[in-house]
Length: 542
View 1 (cartoon, rainbow, N blue to C red):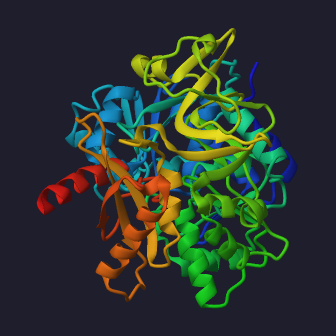
View 2: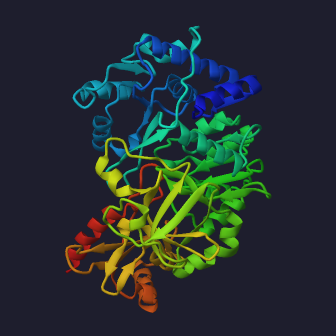
View 3: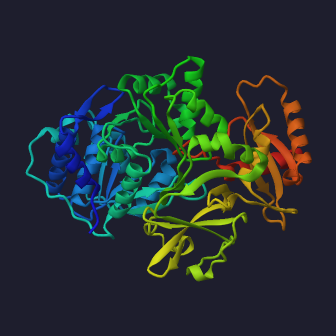
């Protein structure tokens, strides 16, 4: 028998009933743990009366709010898998995901309900629609009215190890978004790791940059402050509002994209603000630079901690490193092109580095395991590793490797283990460039370019992929405040390339105004798009 995360909320509400559970920073509204538990119960009972039952798939497209959290817990209580899709992925991708996952019901804001009626063919699996907000100006359709109406008691669904809790879609940063199946056991394991490894629990105040994290916080007894920001555009966060709520609610920890902390740390430095209550910051979604870690240390509590968990939608967290280790030890090696150290495996997690291959691997016996220091494909096994993609048999064959009664997940990244069993991330497997001098790894090569003071970030891409070897191209994005001539910077970057054996096969250095990035973290570089752009630029120059 597996635990249901909704049970955790029930236990916490009995213990901390009168304490504040959730606050909406933009509206100032809040609710206690008892109220959140009651809202979840009432929503669940109403949905059950409307025909939503255990096993029904429910697409939840509601803005981060008290109601989002209460509705998610209501669906967990019903045993109705929650489908979460990033609206920032665009209509085309979103409609493709919806058609593939075949939701039975929709709970959404009026815009999404309207979209489901306009694109009825894509939503033809729907049995019922529930609107969270006034639909076409008519408030009586608003499901939020139901949370204040007494309902009969709701029995919480008791899951087993295979019971589906949610389907969460990947960002699609290296291909079409895929629906990842989360059993209740996965959420339970994640909750336990957040509680024991990161020490988060009762008495903490969380301001999550990623809405789903608020579910974990409240289940652990922490007060979740929902920031006044668009979670699909973390790089566009208003730092004044984000910092204001940290200071006002005395936030003790926050989990979010490095893109948020780039903006927030710069704002705090410019305005000489220290968030003294902030004792833990977790940054994930893309490699985190040592310079950013140092800036964030400067604006949080003096004894504060910074952690950069590593993983993917399919498996998180699996590895973690503390900020002081980054700035005091590993960052110097990263700047030399050794990759980004993402830390040691968490308890219960096993990692292996295998020889990279694009073919499927049925069993672990077919894998060629590499020694420490050798760069290859990263595979992972453990209690937070999801079992399958939804309705994607072909991708399951490629990504899962059987090991007796257990399995390994091929995460799609490349890296190596050092002699201390720490993982060094070298990039996505799909982003390797096969030059005439051998394989080039994005994170390693780009680090050498990023040392240039006028370069904000860089991207290694390959073009002419139909040839035996690819042409290696470096694309740079300059710091906004750079006042120097672009031609001079490009010349200096070319000199860096010529001076380093790792970069000697670079054929062109191009300048891009603003890199395309992923929709969830606004930090992962869309190298596929940049590769197409680079091909066009090189053709224009020739």
